[in-house]
Image (cartoon, rainbow, N blue to C red; front, side):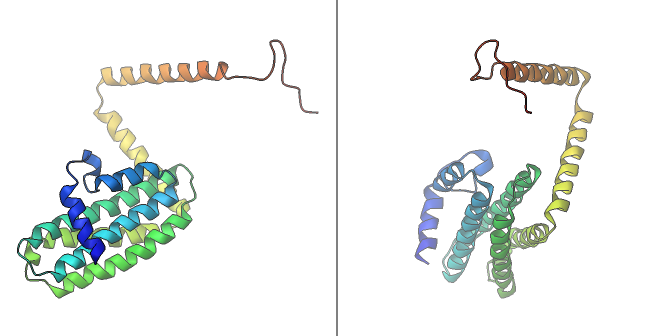
Amino acid sequence: MRGAGLLITALLLAGPLAADRDFLTTDEADQVRLTQEPNARLKLYADFARQRIDLIDYLLSKNEPGRSVLLHKAISDYTKIIETIDIVADDAIARGVDITEGLQAVTEAEQEFLKRLEKVQAARPKDMARYRFVLETAIETTADSIEINLEDLGERKMEVQEREERERRKLEEMMTPEMREQRKEDTAELEKEQKEHEKKKPTLFKKGEKKPEKP
């Protein structure tokens, strides 16, 4: 469990991170930025989740005062990592990226995590009242993630698209007439810039030359 001990130190020394990544250490956040391919990123987040599970087991093995605070944070951070895995997967699926490999690795890992979390819950540590809610949330979030990951990718893509459409409509309903008009202007300006960019694309043909027609 030496790795768990090192992670405790890293978490205590990490300092404030960006608001949407405060559940990662600085080093982990850097690794995420360097890992753009969705399958690799999913596996990376699964590794981070495993480290949190190992940390939870390590802390539970040490009957020391104040451990409940660290346990609460470790469990909460674990849940946020699982939620992020689902977000990364949904984004990739919506873009048509094949993440079969990444989802398989994540699902296998999450099934293990779920058993280990349920084991903690069943053991009922004496200080569990202090982190009972986050533990129950972690178990529920993991079970939900496993269920989603086992869905047909085609069906999941449709669900993601439908959810995005509902959110888009909800956002439009909240917009004032002025905001809608500004949005139209911004969209028109963006389309104009894209068309101008297309016209300025470099070409190997000299002035007056055209691309030969296919026979």
